[in-house]
Length: 429
Ligand SMILES: [Zn+2]
Ligand SMILES: [Zn+2]
Ligand SMILES: [Zn+2]
Image (cartoon, rainbow, N blue to C red; front, side):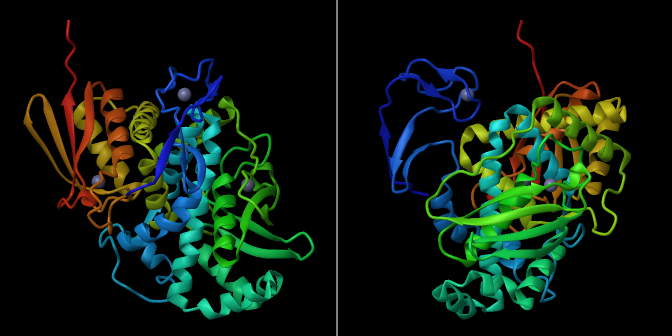
C-alpha cells in the first residue's frame, strides 16, 4: 500500500497521540513512555500522525481492499438475503460478543484516548457494510436519487429503509435497532438500540457505546454526502430502556467528543466480561450472544494495520486478558491449560484447535482452523491472530508455564491453517 507522505518538522512540545504523554522537546521521534512514532506527516489528506487511523484514506481506499480480500465483508450485504455456503463449516460465521468486547475495552484500559480511534474503526465498518449491502441489493440508483434531491429525511422516513436498517442489525447480531425520529432542520437521525453487544455491561458515568455509535455514523455516511457523526443521548447501561443515538451531518471532518471511561470503570467492565467468559453465562435475552464475522474481522484488521505498535499492543492485551481469565477459572498446569484454551476457543467461536504437538520439552505447536479473524480472508501477507496468541500465552503462563507465544502461520498469509508456537522463555543470567 503506497501512501504519499512527507514528514513535517515540528516545533515546541509534542503530545503522544497514543498515550497522551507530552514530550517537551519536538526532537523526540518516538514517545519515551509507549514507544510510538511521534512524527507527523503531510499527505493527500492533510497533516496526520502515522499512528492515527487515516479515516478519509481508509474510507476511500481501504474499502476496496477489505471488499476484495475479506469474504465476510463481501457477504455482509448478501447473507441475510441469499443462503450461501458458510465461511466456517464447523463454527459458523459468527463470533462471540465477549471477544469483540475484550478487543474494545482492553485497549481502553491501556489508554482511554484510544476511544476515538476505535470509533473511527467502527465507522469504517458501518461504511463498508452499507456499501457492500448497496452493491448486493442494487440500490445505487435509489440512493443517488435521494442524494441529488438532498432530502435525506424522506429516505429515513421510508418504511422499507427503516426495515432494512432493523433487519441489517438483527442479522449481524448487533441488537434491536429502530429509526425513531428524523430532524430535518438540524439534519439529524435518531436511532434506538436495544440489546446491543455491550448493553449488559456495567454502566459508565456517561454514555460510552462508542462502537455502536461509530457503526451508525458510518452507515449513514455511506448513503449521503458530507460527514456524519454520532453522539449517544441515552444509554441502556444506565438502566434506560434503550441506547439512543443521534447521527448528525456536518461540513468538515471533525472529531466528535466522547466520554472517555476512567480506568476503574474500564476495569469493572473487563472484570464483568471475565466473569461472563468463565461462567459461560448467556447475556442477551432476545438476541444471541454472537456477532457476524465481519465485525471482529474488520475491528482486528484495521487495528493491526494501523502500525506495528498496534500489533505489539494487541499481543500484550491478549496476554493480559488470558491471564485474568485463567486466574478466575483457576486453571492449573500446562496440559490442563491447553485443554481449557481448546474449549474456550470453541465457546468464543475464536477457532478450532485441531492439533497440539510438543516436538521437544521447549516448544508447543498449536494448530488452529476457522480463525475468527482470518477465515475467508485472501492471502494479504498478514498474521491476523496475534490477539489469540496473546490469550494463549496469558492462560499458559497463569497456569504455571513460562512461554512466549507467537503466530507462525496464518490463513491470511496463505497458509493452510493458523499455527501458534509457544516457546519456553529462557532467562539469561
Ligand atoms: Zn506514548
Ligand atoms: Zn449505550
Ligand atoms: Zn491466523
